[in-house]
Length: 610
Image 1 (cartoon, rainbow, N blue to C red):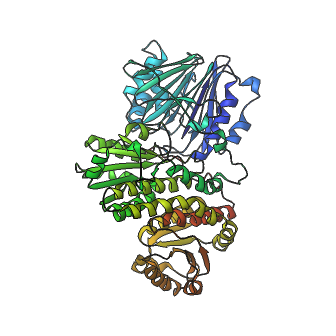
Image 2: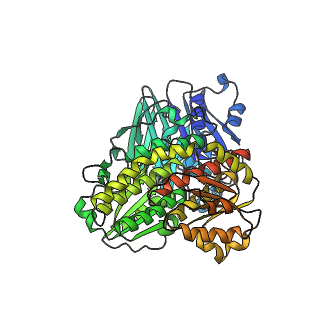
Image 3: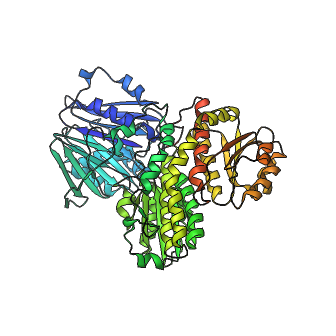
């Protein structure tokens, strides 16, 4: 899941280990590194935390060198074992690879290579790459050509770095469908799959494109296409501060990122509000107003937490702009042959900009000739480069695997989009002003909610030993319930489901007893009376009710075991506030259970494989 590499004048291994630690947040089950020491390739691997790999390394003078690679693995093919960890070497042990992605035809290639005498040690698809390069090395003059020939035989995706004794001063990097980023510095170069790994060393980076190979040394890089056409590198500047990947005074990154949301939401709408016209401006869409007015249908495509943001976007756009919106899970959208009329605008939403299923959906949309825009956090990401336009959410680096601030930033952008589209249609200036004015108050209102952190921790203590939980909401708060349930599942490992409150009586009510906590969103909007009726039905079955509301009323106090009262706002903006106590509740439950909040088991921050 995480690739790093270094070529330069310093001892490479400490740099690679530090970079791997910067990637721990992405999720992994094992790690490894390879270094050229005295002209010989040495490989070290360990399961578990990177600190275990660090402890296993020999004395520095026994493994120093100026060229090294490293990897954190999230098991796909083969279990999380030391043998399956990267780097993977060829039969000679003189060449090794680290790889992100999936090799679809690895079984067939493995069988062919075994017939040629190659001996495999692991169960991974990645090891095939090392043996293929070894095989083609027998018939080509150099490693670079052998890599090109090997990759011609491979079907699938890869972000790949190769190290070899035969060319000990260089690293070879190739990309197809999985990110590879090259960091540029004075007399040293870095390679990574995530810019967080190298931001402490350089802010100057090159984003490798699909079907490109970079050969890097301490003196620079040479980038070519797979057919050897030279490519002039485009050097970008990363503006993320190194402090963004430091926990500071917080126990976990997730808690820090929850508390950053007043700032990140403000960053999302700052400079994007037109006070004079009472509307929003999103210049990055690269669409003239006349084209936006012609849009008759919108598709919002995403995965996981981003999908929940898309669902909220659907409610907002349909209600405010009166445009039909379809929110789709990217992994389903890409395979169901979606109908995309000419007057349709498609948005793909991804925090990392590298989510494999969302990328595949993007490419399917483009293949159908439709206009596709992106909403993402990472400048230079694949989605940012391949879409026709879009907007950045400006949430900064998000380290916790369970997304929090990126979610509310995505909802903020979708709010701006809703205002923009609605002002072109049914929303008058007074209504537009009201939305803008209320949006500007959201950060301050979140600050008020965050002051209830200690109270929410006490509520968390009352449910931390539960085995199941139910989250309920109606209307635009139904996706908020889904997101709250997802957060609890992700980091506390308690089974939780989100439901529309009225659907409880159509099945889930059979599960409810005195041991089942039910977390409900019952803000005082047009649907409050309906939700209250649903909660009475739940209470009658003995459920422990935790209610999030905007007004503490006698009838709610009567049925609730715990009430969390939060500020009120326009109903379409309420999800930005309602989700905050749900994030805090999930965080504290997981922390009270002594779990690894930032790196939950089996999860990765950015899912770059199918």
